[in-house]
Structures are given as C-alpha cells and as structure tokens.
Length: 498
Image (cartoon, rainbow, N blue to C red; front, side, top):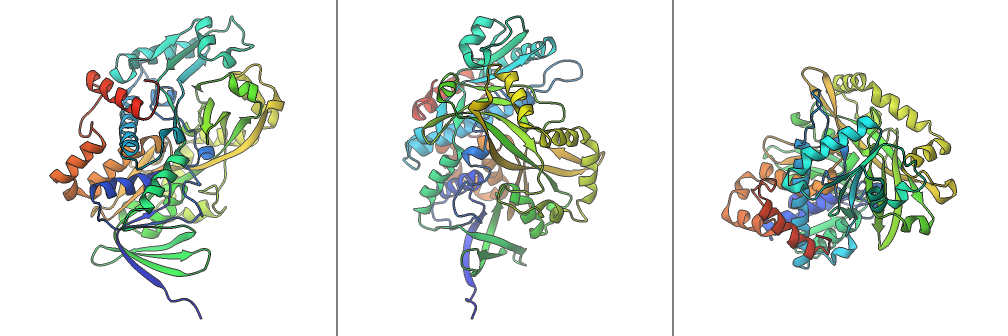
C-alpha cells in the first residue's frame, strides 16, 4: 500500500541547494529569525552542480580580469559600466561573507576564500592597444585604482613566470594586474551556509527530493508536489513564496509554474571541460588567475584562463574551459532537457536566437570536434612550455544561457544572470550563468527588495541589512575613502591581502 502523502506548510520554499538558495535563506533568516523555510534538492548533497568547486571557475568575479565585461564600442572607446557594476556587487559579497565569519555563522574563511592576483593577458598589437584603453577606462575609478598595466617583459615575468616561460621575447605582449583578486570555493561556502541554516529553528533541508509540479492557488500561495527519490514518498508543500535557484534546472521548473512572466524564455545549454595540471612542480610556479580574450562567438563562461585554484586546502592549476554542447541542462540531468523545454511560447525566441548566433553555433561545433592535440595547442598559447604528460582532461559544469523574447530580433541570447519574479512577488526564478555565484549576495538583495516589498522598507529590516552589509543603499565607486575602509575591514576578516 503506498505511503500517505506528507503535507507541510512554510513561508518560504527554496528549490535547489546551491549558492543562490543558501544566500537567500541566510539573508531571510537574519532579517526575520522566526521565518519558516523548506529547501528541496534533487541530489544527495548541497552545491553539487554549478556551485561545486570543479564545476565553477572559482574566480571571485570582480571584473578585474574578465575582458568580456568591458566591451569596445564602435568608436573604439571602452564601456566600463558592466565592469563597475560587477565590481560593486563583489564588494557586497565580501561584506556579507565577512559578517558571516565575524558572527561565527560559517567557519574560518580559509575554507572558502584565498588571495590570488587577477590578471588580463593579451598579445598582438590590436589586443595590446585594447588592454591599454581598458586600463585607462577602469583605473580612474576608485574600485580599480590599484590596477597596474605593463608591456615590460621583466615585469610580466615577475607577475606570471610560468606564462612567460619559453615565450618569444619579441612578441608584443601586455597585461594588467590586480593584487587584491581572490579565489573562492563556492561549494565549500555554500555547504557552510547550509550547515548553519540546518541548525536553526524553522529550517528543513531535504536532499534526494525532486520537485514535480508547482501550482499557484486562488489565495496566491503555492502548492508544490515533490517526490523523495530514495523512497518514492510523495509530499505536498504549501508556501507563500517560492524561489527557484536550481541552476540549469530552473527553466523547466519555471515552465511547470506556468506563470505569464515565464512566457518566451528558453535556454541554450553549454557544457565545459578543463585541462587540469598533474605536475606539482608546474602548479607551484603559477600564482594568479590569468584571463585572455574570448574567441569570436564564445560564451562568457568559455573565456580562456590559466587558473590557480585552492580546493579543500590543496593548490591546483586549471586551463580552460573548453566549451561543448549537450542537451542536458544539468551535469546530472537528462538528454531530453533541451527538447522538453521547447514550448509554443518560446519556440520563436529560441529559433530567432539560434539564427542570430550562428558564430556561437560554429564555435561550439569546433570545440566539440577538438582533439587532445588541439587542446594542448590552445594551452600553449598561454603556457608555451606546457607538456602533454603534465595535463589531463576533466569534465566541468553545465550552464544554461538565457534566451528571451525581443521585439526587434524575435529572440536574444543573454549571457548574464537574470531574476524573473511574478507581479505579486510570490515566485522568483534565477536563470543564467556568469558572473553568478560571485554576485549572489547583490542578486538576492535585489530579489528581496522585489518580493518582500513591504518588509524591506521597515526600520528593522533596513537596520539589519546595514548591519550585514555596511554599504547597503550606497554606491562605492564614487566613495574612495569608504571603499578603502570597507576593503581593509573585509580583508582582515577574510584573511586576504589588502
């Protein structure tokens, strides 16, 4: 005889146990300690998909080194707006993480964040000129005032000796350097936040539980049907607010919610692989995140970088990612994810986005067809002395880029992160990829302001926000003294180089 369906009631349901749900859960619990939260995750552990250290670049994305955040305009000038916005967001993350460490809500910052310089590196006259203009556009802003630029070979050797090893000294090269860059293990941070949440009254975390259906009731609350994948037990959860933060799994869940705000959204999956160094002597020679320029048509998650990582206390060296195509929306997903996501309301945007992104399609086909020899050739552009025997191929994470309706184009492919919420504020969904985890705190604060509109205006919530994030409600790119004060404080708390 089948088990009777379990029923539960809460104020908030979080779907997906990644960095976004963890961040939102902690923020809401700090703002309202008596709030009741249920969290459902289809896998058996938190942060096993996009937030996992091996599925995530781990770059504390602050726009210090990512060239795709500073596009060159038609007149040749550099547009710094996106870089400044992302850098501001990462400062918010640093403040929130510092609060969690100071309040002993997460263990030592050594577990999840390390100082690793961020660098941009280019070659060729045109690219060198671009980087010089980018440096000029950014360095005048207080957030980027510590950025250094050099074309001097000896200086470049000091910054990145492994990259310069075996390189032609007559080659035209340039790099920028930010000493205050970071490497973040978002998997470890996410699990630490969930460990904290689980100990609190009113929080229930369910692993191996898959959400099957979502339906809004007449009173605007939600009924969610869930299956325990281990036992087959059925469950119905009733809640006032739902957040879908399931990475690549968010789009199918948005479609199941059947809300008008979700019409026209589609997803384009991009998989990834790393070359991982296996030689400790080579790993020891590099201490930086060195980002280059993306190939034509490449998605932002595929910008090549030679990357120092610190994962579970062990230093690693990665190069990539190499993009690929899979119809799965999750690393642990189904090959039917993409075809099943195509509906009548998003067919035109998806076809239009495909038509307007032929260079991306061509790029992905080339990436899929790469041989080991091709990948080593790409690596040697960054490490001329690289030997095949020192590197092995590792599977990385799966990302789903957002496709949305567009009046002019029919459909456009978005490369950022996007929060969709219903007009009544009872459901919110996070779609997209980069810069993702690094800006999770800013994204979730924005979500709270959209969906908890009355509460966020109260003196109690505002005071708590300012306690967690001292710059709350302010910008930092125009306040150099305040920025310097906050950076000094967060560097000390997080044990970083200032």
